[in-house]
Amino acid sequence: MSLSGSPVPSPPPSDSSVDARIRSLRRLAWWMDSAVRIPGTGIRIGIDPVIGVIPGLGDVTALVVGSLILAEAGHRGAPPAILARMLWNLARDAVVGTIPVVGDIHDVVFRANQRNMVLLEAYCRDPRGTRAASARWIAIVALGLALVTAASVVLAWMVLRALVTLLA
Image (cartoon, rainbow, N blue to C red; front, side, top):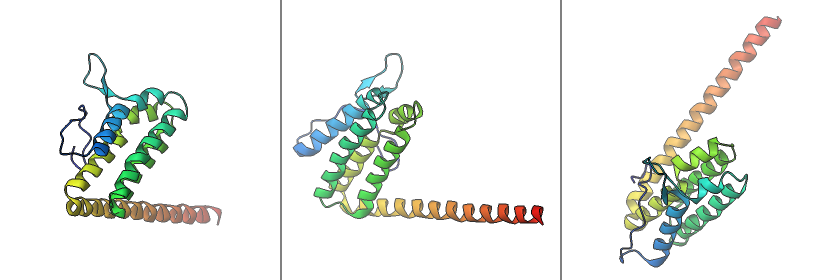
């Protein structure tokens, strides 16, 4: 998976160049997000969307697993930009996961744990490049939030002005 693309659901490789903790976390993320192919389809699901049908349990479990990956990134010295990006993935998964049915579908499509593993492994391979890509991503998200906020303020002002005109 690229840093911005969706994860490629495949079994975790067992190459010996990756240390045991990364291999364990990769395997855990794979089990959570895409371990089983739904027969007759190309869709893969993991434990997360299955237990997600039990309100709260799936979301809490995914958050705990995601926190393990995030903690490992912090332990390895990942900079704030990468940690923020990983935290964004966790937060998005947790928030959308609270919506019945939509959250379960989101779990199947978004695969937050595998996305965070891609970020962690990319950081381990190329700390400087991953840091730069994550900093750009954060800048784009911040700009988007600023634009949405500005548009909301302008819209509120226009509505308020229209109400004042109608009442006057």
